[in-house]
Length: 257
Image (cartoon, rainbow, N blue to C red; front, side):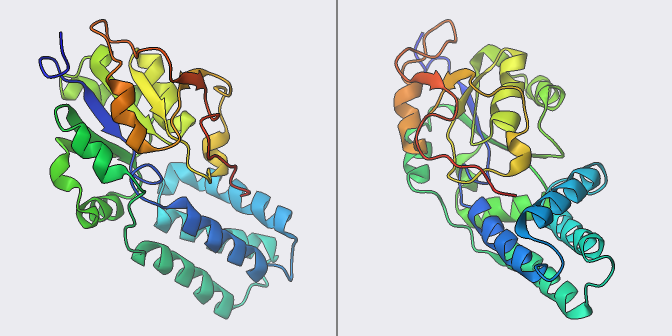
């Protein structure tokens, strides 16, 4: 059976898979370290912010607004309440800069999506609904996708509900993204397939998982995805030749946060 007769459902993460995102977060993070340098060194600021972010995720979820609130709270904690109003205004400015960033597509994205147009294409991304949908609209890619889903988190239960809602067979489902934690491991747990396309920078939280070293198809660039999927066989398994240890596909780095 050919792909045209039985197309796959291929879903893509958004941030750092379709367009750049974490690079500006890293720039802001570095500026934040400098902002709080009167009270702590960079490592202490990193750890303090991460602790606050993890504590706030159940309340605020993912996204720039959550990150900004966590930066403010962490600044108060790290400074022992001494952080001044000017620095708080600067932190709010960091958030506005992140929200106002124009969408910048990663090289090869349009080429890859056009080559995969005979499959059903989706976006499955997590974060603030307003922010993520605005980025999809601004990207110029929206018409290429059959569905766009913005979810609070990405775990096996969330993916399972999405596949059931849309009548998608996990054996014919492929998730593509830069995060092993969010885009790869939960889908493999459901019996689907996943492709890891690492981004040069990865948020610390996304590296906190038990899947390091797992064998999964890993690509240096999204433009290589159509070639990989041409190796899909009728039993719903990725063809040989491009699988390897996750994270070893080329450009990959750890977010220092």
